[in-house]
Length: 348
Image (cartoon, rainbow, N blue to C red; front, top):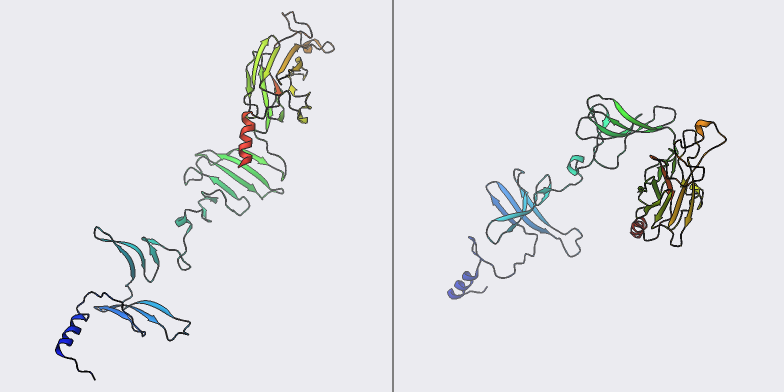
């Protein structure tokens, strides 16, 4: 036993950590499973380390609270200007980060929490959702596009009817206040083709044809282009003579009869042509289009297409009939608006 003097005792006492608190400037090492505990009133919190030896495969540091079960952990950050902000908290129910609850196996999010569609049927059996992909069941599975929560208000819908022998797809509009389905379009077969404006056009006689690039030319030289023929220009030179510029001749699509068949002319009510056409493709690809009066001598008088009060003979140059148009399918250059846009899309 070493007996220390009064001076040494005073020195050791001055360097000791007081029970009432103080500042430790060096490391503190605990070599046993001792815990550091806080006790206040009947509540308790502690930190400890479990380790029975170097070979222990179950060593861990633990945090513990006790007593009435309403204690919880907080990770806080002290602000330089005073006060604290909460980074994370943990209680018996959930972990929260920045005040937001963390989802886990025991606390899974609902569709409403995530802003997703639910799988519940509402009101009179309609399925309401706000996503672009959904699965429905039943004899008439349907996806409604509603402006609000009322299924009988005006809306659009897509429905499949399995109650018939051959399932069919329906597009329809429902008018507000009536509960009736209006403007219904049925697709009775399970195969076929849906045509849209960008793929097909209606010629001057009301028939569908492959659309683009199409130019519609009217009597006075006015014209209409579609998406693929944008940039083409038409000029009326004289009676029955029109120039189609910024093109490379006719398109060779077989649906229009090949390179020599890219013109659709107007017909009369008896399906007889009203005009003759001829053309010349100039060296730069411009099309010079000529239209001529056309008569039918071997038909009844009402169908001969004789211009009463005019001195036109069969084969005379004449403008395209008023109110009618000629459809011309052209070949557009590589630098046309449509071709440039297509290259941009294909390059993505």
